[in-house]
Structure formats: C-alpha cells, structure tokens
Image: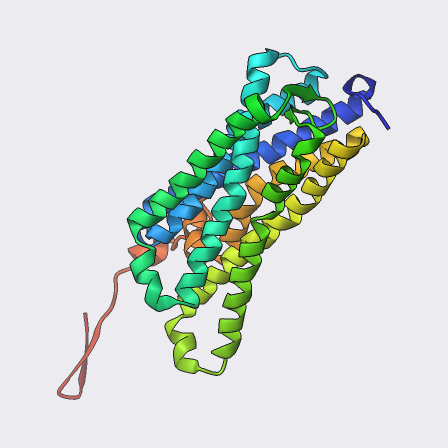
Length: 314
C-alpha cells in the first residue's frame, strides 16, 4: 500500500481524485437543491426547517471551501497552497464539521419538544429562538476552531494521509477532543428514544396518530438523517483518534476523509426519498414530473346535462 502520495500509481491517483470530485459535486448540487426547494415552496419555509437550511449551508461551504483543496492535493501529490490557506482549510473544515453535528442536536431537541412536549413547543421554538440557536452554533464553533488552531494546537500542517490540513494537538488535548466529538450523540440518542417511546405509547390511539401524521413523517426523516450522519462520522472519529495515538496507513486515513465528506451529500438523498414535499420539489426542478399530453389538453371538454329526460351535449 502506498504510504505517501508520491508512491501512488496513475490508476490510484485518478480513482481517488474522481471519487472525491463526485462527492463534492453531489454535495454542492444536492444541498443547493434543498435550499432552493425551501425557498420556492411555502410549505417548507416553516421555522423548524431553518435548522435544515443551516445544515445544508454548512455542507455547501464544505463542498466549496475544503473539498476542492483536497481534490487538488490528491491530484498533484503535494499541498500547493501555502501556509495561510492551510490554516484557513483546517479551521473551516473543523468548524463546519462541528456545526453540522451540533445542528443535528438542535434538530433532535426540536423534534423532542414537538412530539413529546407539544404544549411547550409553541412557546419555546419560535422563529427568533430557532434563528438565535442556529446562529450560536455557528459562532461558537467558528470561534473554537480559531482558538484551537492558534492557541490549543501547536501548529497546522498538511497531512498526506488525510489529504487535508489538520490542527496538530498535543496528547494532553485528547480528552477534550474526545468529549467534543462524542458529546452530541448523547442528547440525540435521548431525544429520539423519547420520541420513539411517544410513538409506541400512542400507537393504538388513532386520533393522536391522525393529528400527528405529518410530525411523525418529519421525525422519521430527520432520524434517518441522523443515522446516516452518525454511521459515517463514528468510524471517522475513531480513525482520527487512533491517528492521534499512533501512525495509521494512508489508505485508512483517506477513507476517514471520504466518510467525513460523504456526510455532506447524504442528506438531500434522504429528504428526496422520505419527505414528500422535498421529493415533489426535487422532481419538479430536475424535470422528472409527468406532463399531460398535448392531445388530451387540446381536446374540447364535453359536458352532459339532463333536461326533461332529454340528453343535451355541449
């Protein structure tokens, strides 16, 4: 196995670059489609979907700011952008990754209040509160990433294995890194466990099921989003922690990077598959909606009336 980028053969260079390029294109196109669907469809412009927009924006920025740099890195075999852009890339990648997972925490808490504590939901999750909490996540983790790069970390260096610029942490920082990595999973698990219990308790209540049918569908979609996200992030986190403790093969490091970048492109597929409103908008913009034939539309419509037992056609 090639331990450095220079040791790769042409087929490896082409395949690695092509895969990451495909992930970037899908991430950018899919999340732009999500934003456009919310913008065009009034049904999707509810305040709770602001969290989905926040998540989509972080994925779009990941596709625009960090993925292209990694693609060039893999294609050229070296980091050609200099130290300043290396710092920028590391800060952006780290902050956007944390913004994504902690936005999912907010989404889980939102669903928890909507299903389990509906009386408090209307008073708590107002438009202003949702905008403030989403903005706080962005502000907190951008600030933390800058502090991590210039204060906590000893340096920022490009890493051939991950095909990224990484903040170099001392071993003493591993406990706090582990806490930040795995802390968000606990509230997510708690919230969706409570939602599941609520569904189970009311499973025999037809009136509750019918009055909450839309919320149930939304909760299932967001839960699938979380499962897809966590299934990609968990192994990448484990690989990164292993790297901090001991060297790992380049292929394993690149696999971790691929998993992280794939988290940016899975959500639009989940929305398109499970959410009827998003699915309808996606089909419309992708030209997949069925159109009536010209012959049917142009044919005159006949109306039949019954007057004194006589049939009259118009």
